[in-house]
Image 1 (cartoon, rainbow, N blue to C red):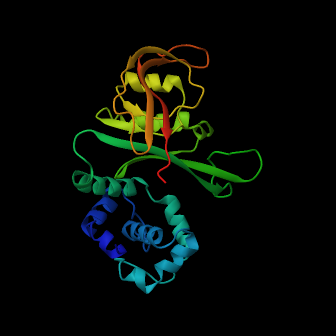
Image 2 (cartoon, rainbow, N blue to C red):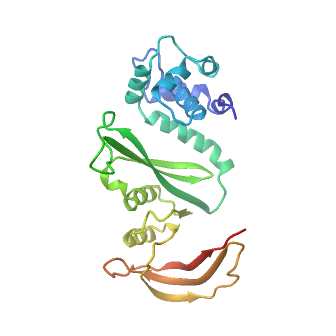
Image 3 (cartoon, rainbow, N blue to C red):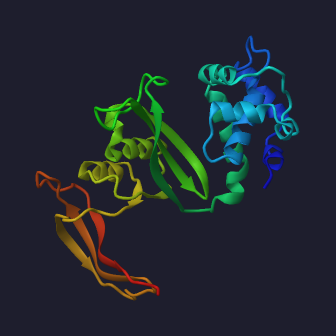
Length: 268
């Protein structure tokens, strides 16, 4: 799919309207909000590793001029940097929300949805970023964490800068609880292991599926009969209703379902 085709899904009138609503073009002569959005999208779709100098080169290219509504001579990378630093990020969030509202009926399944959560870290020099996390005491890099949810299309995102959010027990917990998806099944990997967090999800009526690290301490409440326990890749040995125990051997108040000893068989 070409960039021009993607931009065609977002009406220019909407971009202008949102620019006015979020006041992103106040006292701006060249790099208006609509152009900045087009430049960011164009750059991300054309290069794997984007940079200010790459964006400057794209801005003055004939290819970008064919898709942009407004370009000027003499725009340098430092002007693009200053614009990115000062532009209201809510403008881009509003564009994303418009796209989500427009296409979710077509691309999101009806009824119960499976929503996946994951996080990634982005490193930035401390010379460019005052806030942010540090992985170790040495070096000048700081990190931002992005936690996102997906269900065929991205549904939500959160940015974390505080050191405590290096732990997924904090970051993913925050992202999941803020979305309050009581009509979906939330899926995440082993990043969250806190029994208190599982308890919190249960209290908020958030259905979730994840994997646990061994060893697993639990109390069996009920054992379910396992029928058709073999598939092309899986063997399920036990299906249990349990209460998990935390590090202090305190049991969860609510029951959880534990699928035990799931082995992945080779398909070759």
